[in-house]
Image (cartoon, rainbow, N blue to C red; front, top):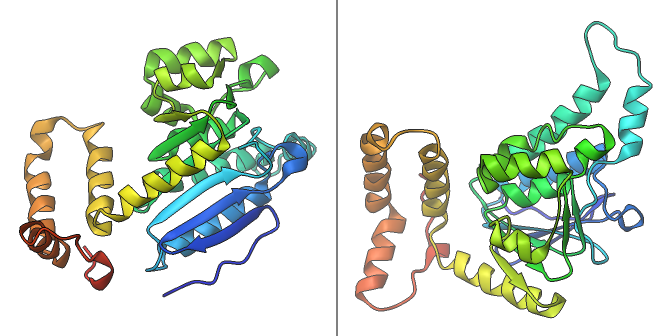
Amino acid sequence: MNMVYGNLSTVNRCRVGNVLHLTLNRPESRNAMSITMVDELLLSLQQAESDASVRIIVLRGANGHFCSGGDIKDMAAARMQPETEGVDAIAGVNARFGQLCLAYARTPLAVVVALEGTVMGGGFGLACVADVALASASTDFRLPETSIGLVPAQIAPFLVERLGYSEAKRLAVTGGRIGAQEALSLRLIHELHADAAALEAALQATINQIVQCAPNAVAASKALIARARLEPPQDLIADAAAVFSRAARSAEGMEGGAAFLQKRRPAWSNLNDVQ
């Protein structure tokens, strides 16, 4: 199924070949994440996952900023709603953002984020869930929740996953603000580039690298690596062997082996098997 992707109210969408570009588009608020934006990002991911033509999602922000965090207006509106029958509107808004982070963290598609300008709060969290995070030297990272009496609730697991317990805790308790160079040294981001033009070139190079890899193998690798974070190696031996065997016996595995022996690039687009 090949989807047609039109722009949404807060997310611009453009498919170029195997890549779906999603641009957070609320420039008047430095792309603050409203509940509408959360829903539109979730919808876009669901559509991409059902679209055989999409292999990569690129996340970025409009007008030189990535995302300034959650929309305070949404939280203020939720605070005004009375809690009825145990339903807490603020918790509901927060949980919806958590579902967004989890969906992008677990997707079998490759997720690349191109970061510029402001990366705060929830935007910081989205940077952490991406498989590849690229940034320009202008990027300013901030985890401001505790400095305004809040908690980095839904992004906490992904902060620990990306940065480790010690650095995640340090940034949380200091309302951390770090520049792009420190973000690189902490491995919050994987590459740092001098300006927007260099960032675009690096993004295209990363896309080119990913599309040379087999899509089902990428998905299976992401799932296995996610398990490897939490399970001891001895518990993974049998399952990992089964994953490897399925890959080796698949059309992708056959094509990859043949291409290696014939010294050519594999033709993944001609394969339709699903693992």
